[in-house]
Image: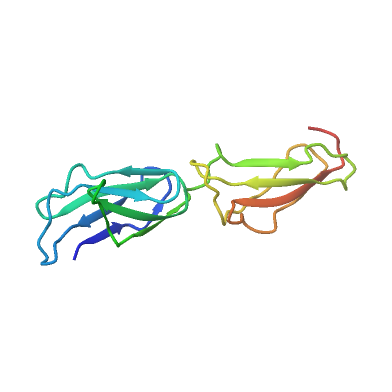
Length: 178
C-alpha cells in the first residue's frame, strides 16, 4: 500500500527546478509507518538531490527534491532505511529533464577549415552548436549565419538544430580579410 509520487515529471535542467518526491509508507493494513529513513537516488549525471529532512512523519510521509543540470531521462530509486535490511521501493518514477533556452555564453561557432582561399569557391564549413547555460544541447533552434566584411557568400543551415544542438552551413569569399 506504500507509494511514491514524483511531480512534476518533466522539468528544466537548470539545477534548481525540482520534482517533489513524496514517499508514503503504509503497512499491509494501510496504517502509516512513521520514523523510517528515506534515501532517494537518481540515474544519470548532474543530479541535485535534497533528501528528506528527517524520517517519515506520523502519517508515514517523507518528501525529497530532485533537480538536475543534465538534460536527460532519470529513473528514481527509493531506499527505505539504507543499510543492512534495507528495502527498495518497487515504484521507480521516471523524470525527464529538458534543456533551457539557448545561452550565448555556451553556444559555439566553428569554421573548418578556419582559413580558405578567397576565390569564391573554397568553402569553410560553419558549425553552430547551440547550448543552454548548463551546456546541454538545445535542439529545434534556427541558426542564422552572418558575417562582416564584403564579398562573402553564406549558405544557411538547411534545418533547425538537431538533437545535439548542431546546425551546419558554409561560407566562401572573393575578398581576403579576417
